[in-house]
Image (cartoon, rainbow, N blue to C red; front, side):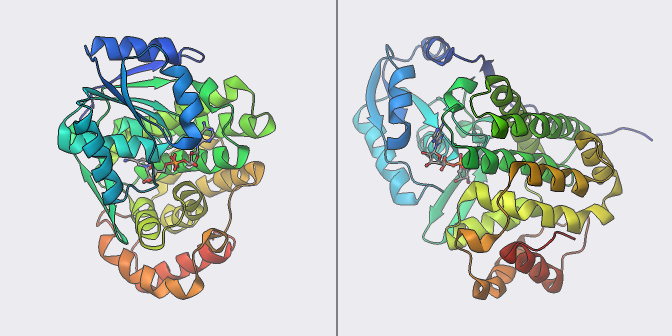
Length: 353
Ligand code: NAD
């Protein structure tokens, strides 16, 4: 078989060292020659952010962070950046915080240094997202890719287990969905496979002992690989579904991904045997779904969308909203009927078959 592909590698520096966020951040801000930092961190992340930004030339701390980045929230952050004449954006927090920094970078071109505190992975992608009313729009722009990422797994020791599990499965979804996403190439698949292996090994350790730094590190490493694979491969069916659900019904991002993933895998696996074999191999199981099922049981993962605010009578509207966005490359044919079944199963938390 001939191997032919095009792969674009996104340029950013990764500093991965537990317990070193403050020093690594200082070095990155200095390398940019920045003198006026805007620190973006939600109120919940404020204490952690204050600790690791100590000694930085901070011009303003901005804490209005809202999931899925509503347009007015982005506008206010952009105004604050202009008012304080900042020259670097430092985000400390989960995907919502990184997302706000990206929204500011999108219109200002300011460099972002990201310090992630969840496994969402937004820091490793050039994808931005903004929500206008009930419509979430995403786009790709080189300006939003953080110049550097400071990974410090010790910052995650306080991430509650249920949030760690949901966020870790969000990362796993990047890996699995990358396997059949529109631009998947052999490099993405290799990164995704190693991401699955690392997450499947690291997340149970986090659940067993949330203070296990090595489990946190392994999960964070997997989450980074997942995001790199996803950034290159693009959004597959799983991401299209979760994107529509999150924006339209204001569902929480990570638990939505955690619930929906097995149903998409169950739908696609029979039509994508090579991808399924790769996923299974990464889990060390016979099929991908066996591996995912076992991991979900081990992690006591989120099971049903109805637990997260999705209503049964919203299913027909969701089917209509999702169908036009189904990627042509999706291995299984998606019909109104099988999509409805998928959403109903995810709503009630039925066995993914
Ligand atoms: P989040 O950032 O909203 O964080 C969830 C909650 O966890 C918040 O209440 C936050 O304060 C808290 N939290 C974060 N870190 C913590 C820590 N270390 N300890 C204790 N609490 C902590 O959720 P998320 O799942 O990280 O990110 C979701 C958002 O990111 C969505 O809007 C999604 O669209 C976006 N996202 C974007 C991309 C991309 O490539 N652009 C990729 C993944 C996710």
